[in-house]
Amino acid sequence: MTSPTPTRQQHVIVLGAGPGGLTCAHELARTGYRVTVLDRENFLGGLSRTIVRDGFRFDLGGHRWFTKNPALDAWFRNLMKGRLVEVERTSRILFGGKWFDYPISVGNVLKTAGLVTSAACVLDYSLSYMKGLLRSAPPVTMEDAFTQQFGRRLYDMFFRRYSEKVWGRPCGEMSADWVSQRSKGLSVWTAVSNALLKPKEKAQSLIETFLYPRYGYADICERMRDDILSATGNRVMLECEVRNVDLSDELHPKVTWNGPNGLVTESADYVVSTIALPVLVRKIITPTPPAAVVESASSLEFRSVICVNLMIDMPQLAPDTWVYCHDEGLGFARFHEPKNWSPDMVPDASKTSVVLEYFCTEGDKWWNTSEADLVARSVRELAGLGLLDPARVIGGFAVKAREAYPVYNLGYSERLQAMKDWIGAIPRLAIVGRGGTFRYNNADHSIEMGLLTAQMIRGEVGKDDILRVNTSIEYCETNLVPAATRD
Ligand SMILES: Cc1cc2nc3c(=O)[nH]c(=O)nc-3n(C[C@H](O)[C@H](O)[C@H](O)COP(=O)(O)OP(=O)(O)OC[C@H]3O[C@@H](n4cnc5c(N)ncnc54)[C@H](O)[C@@H]3O)c2cc1C
Image (cartoon, rainbow, N blue to C red; front, side, top):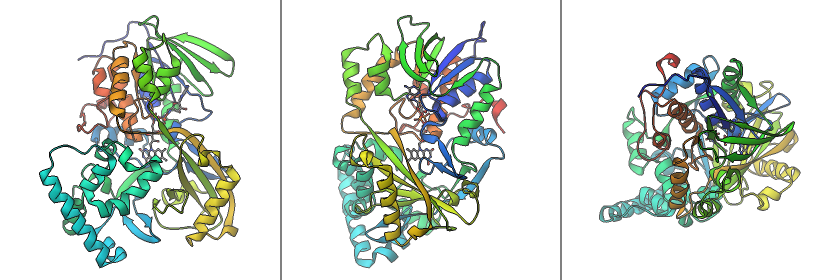
């Protein structure tokens, strides 16, 4: 398909200034469209934000850049030229008071867990492998998927507790989809073959280096914002909460937002939304969608996350990129030291910082714990692990993020499909992003969706192409990025 040249400058309103929304606006602005980006928060980046405090920089949990799509990777490197560092991934799992390498390696499990436990893991895995040969139906729950892929013992050691912390419910109540999306290509065999044969092609979950913006992940969104604003007429507006998308006139949707000067309504040629899909359907779109669609939206849930950020007067806690903490006695599920990702994340080399992730649901016990208690608990627990002297902590604060994790509970996919089918038929509205499409996207997936949405608006690809990003169907469009923006 060819791109029609707009006869008058088309105006696209993008809802949300996270990676997905900004990428779409960036790509449209590059090809002559007028764009308005609105975000309810007073910062850019959505879940990919970076907070700066007293010379320390904190992402909302460590964010690495990785994509399997070479064209997208080239687009990213071009955007971030001169602003990236390459980070070696050295992660560990803290389980039962013992430190295991992550990704799991055969030699390390043998050494750390001992011969008896390792033998039980192999036996268990062999049993589930043999059962798998007789089974024809795909797994239904997350528990089935993990046990079929790794055996019950390894599932219990390395997946169950962490997953239950993230999702706040037993793995038997979660859909198997998440496992197929996230640990595609990872199995006991890949761990063994990586240990023994070291093939060049590693599974998706076994990547050993990644790229990272040296001043924090939000730099990606800041770079795009600067490019967007370099053309007259474009706007990126913060503290503007979208209240209504009126679709009465199908060809000229109207957006109403509440900004610093009160309520404003504008019409657009196209609206692109990265607002959490259930919220968009239930609270924002008018005329009210069909009852079945609203009902589907009401049954979809999100998990939230609280990051406790500590500033510390010592050079380093641990050498890891991430530490996954499975033990139920610990409130947090994962932590990272931003300095291990980039030296520019701390004010000087004598200091470090740490970000601890508490997964929660809005209104639950973690959500309602005071900031002072969260900070005190985090310090106490790190000290209990022997990693921190509390006297060295020079400050701490907590950051909450709603709508952080779309929950793939049993039956979610049929309900989601009902909403997507309805939205798919609306001519001038597109949905993009993690909350926006209710898909467990990494930032690269949302960026890829943003680029494809711009191409869809230009008439180069279809709406369905956008929703194929980050599905189990391998999607790696080689002409995704226009030649002009490649290195
Ligand atoms: C703890 C954690 C760790 C992660 N680690 C990684 C990682 O290592 N690598 C990686 O690639 N990804 C990682 N991610 C995922 C990454 O953060 C997201 O995939 C990415 O930010 C999604 O971008 P998005 O634009 O789709 O959505 P978001 O970033 O969620 O942006 C949506 C935007 O919409 C705005 N919005 C919502 N409602 C309204 C409204 N009514 N009006 C106006 N604006 C509104 C929000 O404020 C937000 O800015 C991680 C996420 C978390 C939570």
